[in-house]
Length: 287
Image (tube, rainbow, N blue to C red; front, side, top):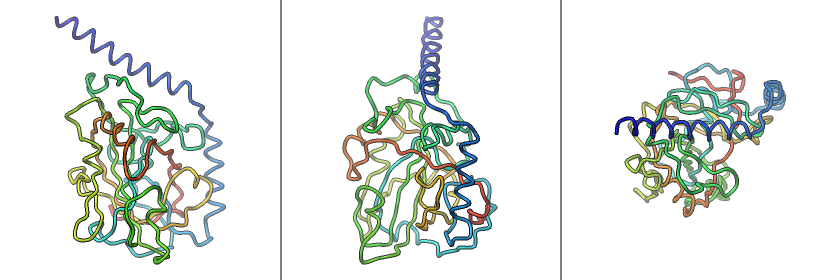
């Protein structure tokens, strides 16, 4: 009986490793020189031109020399939740997500950072359905995602894209992003994504009251919006960031259900922006 169970576990682990290896083998990976050229272009198009500090960054490193400071956005309890979306692999680096996924295709796919820990064989058991695959590959067990809960000082309601965070009556709203990195597990006892992203109105503001509060002390810093469209140019939007260092385990099936029906019309994982490393493009943070 024990030998059968051991063999079954080994089979599951091997299958997961094979799936991951096959996916990586089939993905185009650019050379280091391509990423280096993108970093050079980013500095050329950004430095000295008045843009504020950029994101994402290594949250374990506090050094930055960008002088374009701006006021920190209020606490999320005094802002309206306007959008929730997630990126495949963490855009930020630090805490429990420091393993580099590789350069990827140079356009934000198959790059970023992944969970440093390990899941059990049972949690890595593949699911039989496509998860959030509307505009790309299906999500798989073991995948790392960075979830962005976006808040705005404007009088807005939750909706699709970052456009839901802006309003004609407020030209320069204060923006705050609460970042939570998660890892997907085939585990009904893990966090339910629909509950994690539940939206309620609290004291007159739209809120996501179930953002985990036990994922370590958030690292707060001044930065920008993200996404690979800003690999070679600066994002002009100013954002107060709060990124938790610990990774939350979430049931992959609940993520799939959320992608099938949510007010934000999110049905796939977004790509990631290159990690911003140039101190001239980063704000200083106190760690």
